[in-house]
Image (cartoon, rainbow, N blue to C red; front, side, top):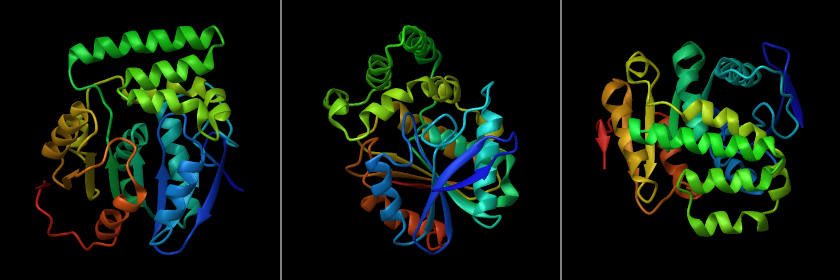
Length: 270
């Protein structure tokens, strides 16, 4: 385990795999760097990149300085970029994709390229209201100390497949995921609003937004909306994939984009 100090002094734990251009892997809700699916993803990406797989604050071996703010998570990413040599590519999955966009807006000169997979902003006012209800339900469960039910409620509420939610307790690392349930409040803070289209239009970093063909339809809508306003962005609908994307399927896209082999891709590649 390696460690780096973020700007506010919070210790961020990380592991490094592979060789090649540096890639910061920003994971989604309740994920942590030792969670076996995340380790497998990182090792797959390490076939082409030097992968920095880190625990977001409040998770795993990283610290959790209060109060929480999105800006602090961006500072954590900056600390990881500095640990990688001062400039890196970013891969953000789910709520991690939101952080990747925020980092692109605030740390553009330190970022080569960004891939956002399944950005999960709410897509309209009706969903925003429903999501607020979900947030309240999750927080009520957390306040009662029912972390396991909070994780299941959140996962079901954001549209994860029923079978996946049912199987969660069988996953290696489930106890750790449940222990990290309080950080769901962080992911909700990242995704509770409509996509920031006005701000996204200011991005200068090359971006690729990828959405799974089988992911919830609203993610496709959000992905297209973001692509339409970002002059540096391309869109890819990934055939046969859902929110739990296969790293082996994703890797060729990452290799082409991050290594500059897809510069001639159309604005929207379907």
